[in-house]
Image 1 (tube, rainbow, N blue to C red):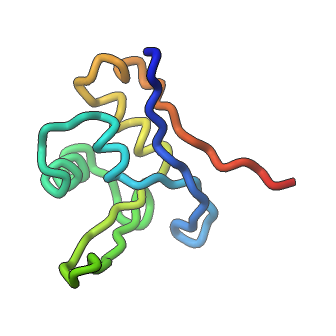
Image 2: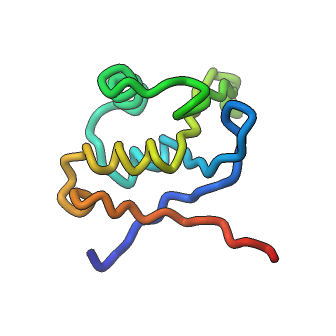
Length: 105
């Protein structure tokens, strides 16, 4: 795979514990899913038993024009599992490239 797409990773908190997270919408783009994002993420959560507050967080936002928007911040582990389950050949070995934040120290 010569052109590697990166899914940015950021620090967050899940269940009062520090965790590395990524935005599910960004992963959806990298996996090149043809499904609408909301259907894709909700189907995967239900099908594979991911748990809110353990595997992902839901953030309710508003777009600049005031429309509601739901963002899913998922753990790196969940992201890798979703990548492994993806039909895209470039990710079939579960080697999801994540842009880990650099440690400032």
